[in-house]
Length: 395
Ligand SMILES: C[S@@+](CC[C@H](N)C(=O)[O-])C[C@H]1O[C@@H](n2cnc3c(N)ncnc32)[C@H](O)[C@@H]1O
Image (tube, rainbow, N blue to C red; front, side):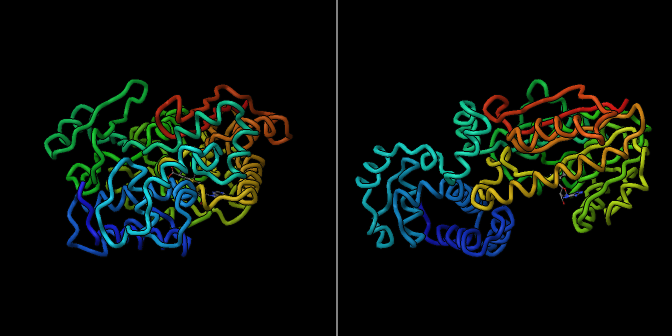
């Protein structure tokens, strides 16, 4: 593949915004791509892919070539991919033989898998032997997965329509609404997306709303709804009949659901900002189903958000675990007697998952609940994001 100086500069400026200014990788890439309308589809995918991969392998790259110069770091990454470097002045400081030798001698698994030491040790402590395999898998590039909006189309019809738009997809067993892209492409520009025929949502994430066992006509609360990914799925499973109360602390996130719901042809969603414990108390025993898609470390979705590795800290994980425990102590009161709730995270750490559920069940707030089903979804087993999904019944 031929390298172009100005697309590499695009990668450099994206890396600078991510590492020096602490911005989120997905937002940075979106902005970088918009900054030069002359870049074609190939340039854009080079910039997006290279930035993500360099963020993913940042520790390893910096170990192999300790340098503050982005050209050295890019050159090292390029060699790691099995490519040759062109004879450019910018790459003159790079010694491919030395890099190769250093890599071959490397034994430290945290550097090899490109994660901070504390994170490597935490994973090992929490998951034991399974961590190595899982971590390796979490360093792979994520597939692009679509969730068919069954309110507007079927999987077969969408597959055919996307094919007409030049996008090839395939389906997999066990995920009834999912289509996977054969090749990474920008699907947001398609007529099918604009018509609300699908949303982009990882296959594991599609298991969450499905686990809640909703039916048309139910009253459902999605208490950590964010921008509404799972709310939209719930609405489709409910055939757009009943009521969904979509709640979050952040109003700007809930606002995004409005637009998405319109595109999806959904009108059963009501939005409510959580202003404090009163908001929750007023909704006591009002829901047939409650979804707690709680804030988490995001360690299950490192494929999609590799910058999470460098943003997390032991302190931030502890803080998020405290929030999870607090949510579990108060929000389940919104479930009607005989109703059900799902507690879910996109983390693979037992301390955010089964241990939180066990603590809840052993507490006063959880005494009326029982665990019906629990799914620990690992990336190395499923091929998709890591998730945890627990379904509980209120007696
Ligand atoms: C995992 S994200 C939700 C993703 C969303 N359900 C989706 O499918 O797109 C967790 C959400 O919980 C919200 N949150 C954080 N603390 C909360 C709290 N105490 N109560 C309710 N929501 C909270 C965050 O703002 C964030 O949007």
